[in-house]
Image 1 (cartoon, rainbow, N blue to C red):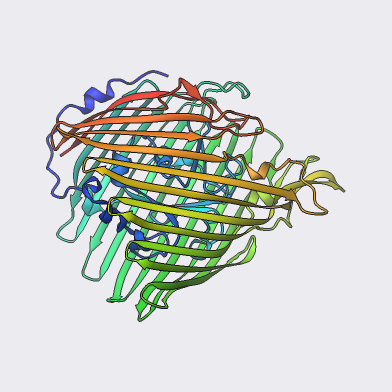
Image 2: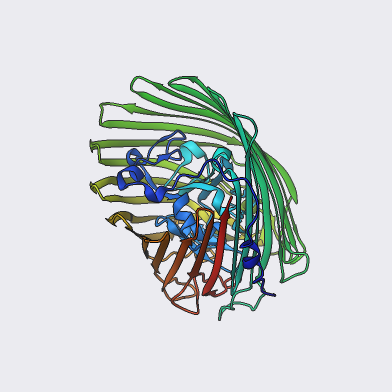
Length: 622
């Protein structure tokens, strides 16, 4: 694949454009106390300060993204110490929280982009190669490790990632970005403008070109390079009591192993928010989403239409959130590579849900949060997802919390309807995988320059996916014969060492014990359980130097994997940026700097070695 070093000098050419009349907020100028009060919405589906959230929640800010060496959304997610991010090859990632990682097994993490679920119900998981937003337009990423079923429904089992883009009012003027490196090239542009006094709009386009990665010793040689683009818009209108958002994206990509392979898709979302009284509000959201993936003589398509209403009420000691929704999906899977087929090849499914959660203040410092969600599906029946939490704030700078929750992963079409004559039989009785989670944690500011979050968990799983032998007909059939538990701890802290130097550290550890239930069998040797490092550690430094220079560096250490075994690794990334003026930024960055290449995945069918990458870039604002 040819290099494109011409991108950088081209993008450094000055352009004539109107200056932005509103600069985005620079979170690097906020104190530790102010960062602790950043508004978040993921924990309760309503805005609240991070310091009082009774769950394991980590926030990646827009400033963290701007100072990161990452060139893609999955690489940005490495900033969250409560996620396990595993790069498989040039286009594919496996990302999870609290275990079960792997391309096939990472099916217990729900991901939302501006309220639109990107969890694929075809295979239960996220195709990360379908999502390439302009990173400069991402406002905040909230990462919850732990169940979120009461608010988000089935499949929010081990965690929720909520990605929010910037309001159109906060992305005005022209922005142009380009990077050029030894293995990756990117280019992006966004233009934001006002539509009168009460409305604004932005349009954007993002392009990337990633070369194939070095072959793993145990996997097949393959050209896993990918080139793609994504474009879209967002429009926002604000009135006294109303806010309307309309946004959409369209994307495409090409892979090089087989001619014609690649992805196509589009989505459109509308959201209306209305303040009823100073203590109550109503929100209505609807979206349409479609994608098609072509890879190795297979084609899968998924079309989704979703409508959800939400009501919030603050009255006395109660802080109530309730909602209801309906979703329909239509999928199709065509396989010309081998004998595995979905039967039927295409299907339309319907899902309806309703939920309610109340945060009741027993006293000024003690609250109880209780909620339940009911969801019914034409494919998997009715699920009941309760949640009970307690939050105690012994001081204004500390929150202690504990929780017990139930979550499920509902069957995918592959779980029940995948067949292969004489080899694999359909499994119409495959049921939901179930979790009962026990959690406890602390979030606070031990000093005025330090934030600290600690959480522990004990997860009990039942009815996990397995495989057994049928005698009539003679074939393998998927079942629910695995069970067991995981336990672990997560911690992260931020220290403002000096006014110009900030350090962040994170650590996670997990232990696991699984077994086949009495009377059951599993021919896959626990393939559905994935492969997880026992621990991972991270350290990140952000330094603001004189002359508008910023130097940022990150280190991470990840334990090895078994089956097949791969060694643990330590890696570093770094970025140095210089604001030549208010309009021009130049930067030099590198990822995986400690080794020529390393393995992160032990997937024998897909894994490639992750190489060192160095690139230069520029970002222009007008």
